[in-house]
Length: 479
Ligand SMILES: *Cc1c(COP(=O)(O)O)cnc(C)c1O
Image (cartoon, rainbow, N blue to C red; front, side, top):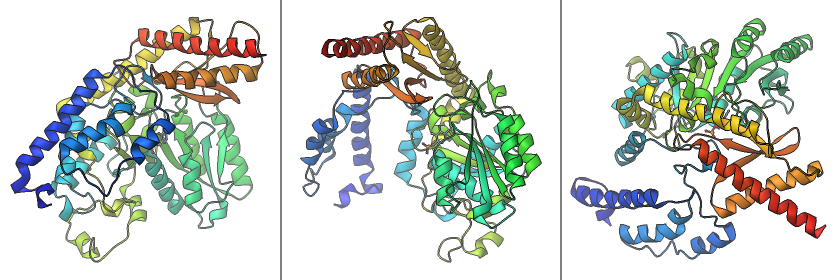
């Protein structure tokens, strides 16, 4: 079995094995005609069930053959121009190369003695990101597994920096369109069930700062403590960006921690034409960025950045075997003192390779392209009598619904849209997402693929209308 260990003696077999895997994936990507096969869980479950994990195949080629059936054939392919669903992106090659390198070397970013240069590379990328945000000289941060963890850590820091230890008194303010990880974090951090105050949005789905001001005042009047304001820079559903400067001013006034959840909008940090949309982010106490959304990085790659690096001490615990206090005085750098995780992937290497090959402008151009495409898509939807579109896109998301010419009940329109989304998914021709707006069923394109064209969008809209019309036609016949 030693022949499977990656080391000096097996370097040749490593090269052959990984090359074979890369060749198969490359062939797969080249031959993929649809983003999805349309397979159902009921069809796929027996295929996976039939694999006996206690009877290994012994060699990589056989396992790759099997992988075709259990995974590759029916995977969802984000590189396909008609994948328009969630915030998961097609990935850039330099980052995939970085992924292959980091898993082969298997650095762990908790301590210097498990990563050496990896620690310094991560730190340089953190500094690069805080520089782009404009967080100032004391800024710091750490890579995380994703926006959910970044938001959790931000709320931990805000809780520890709050003016009271009475958790029942703490309040977090975020818009009704903020990510559910804000609520989840509040619960995990022991805050009360009513700790998160949901602020309504305006017609462009941006937090209403006037209401925020009133809620902050009410909070103070009741003797409660505004712990944090979470501004979203790129809401998951609409890509809307909360009014960051107004929120920053209110955070100052009420002594609240300002967190900007830029999990989605962080791609603007690399844009040469749209960076101004994030104006005000430089006043944040902490910022979440998901490189695995708008920097075209493979999952996972995310970071939490903070204005005052010293606040990261709230995540510091010492273990004699790992990061003794002595190491601090010896000036040996480690990242575990800043992280909620211990053993941690060297995800930073993917971004490093990306910046070294393409540069930030390269990433920014790709993100700008999908934002431009969203404008085109919005124009198509606005001109199409079959569709009702919700907001003009600030980033790359379009929320819309099919509306039939003939008058039907709102519930029937909801069902037609739901049906169309499911039928489209089952056909594998395209993948779109769905969401609710004011209680009604809508559909959503999250555009993250610069290869998608306006013609793709138009074609998918025709497919959706076809499915919706078929549904309405059938229900009429059966009525
Ligand atoms: C995706 C998203 C998150 C969660 O990030 P994960 O990487 O999926 O954990 C948080 N906030 C916003 C606004 C998001 O879009």
